[in-house]
Length: 168
Image (cartoon, rainbow, N blue to C red; front, side, top):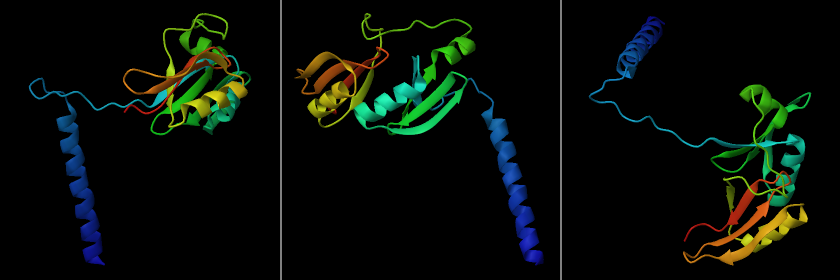
């Protein structure tokens, strides 16, 4: 019993020493400063109706809902897309958080200066599925000079969605 208690004490003590060492080394040192590791966690689209956008992307692209919360129209939802999530934020919640109304788009307006890209081995099939689900056609599937197949649709809010094959 004493051995277990001593081992536990020394384990905790050494963890404490390691934490203190980490705290000391966490301070930036101008001589050895390096860029912290980052990764893309989310792409968030501002939409009129988060629930409708989630349903559209599930039907059009076969993505699975991961999370949804609605507080009287101030809504947020996420879809599983692999390592990065595709998320939707209601215009009301965006306006509340940004303290300013964001620029919006619609399927009939000029596209915003951004797009999301969904990668699939079968671009024509997903393009057809998206149109059937209510997407607006923008550019039919075609092969690019670098060998990739690419098509474009606008989602129900007007966001540009590139449907593409993996890069060769």
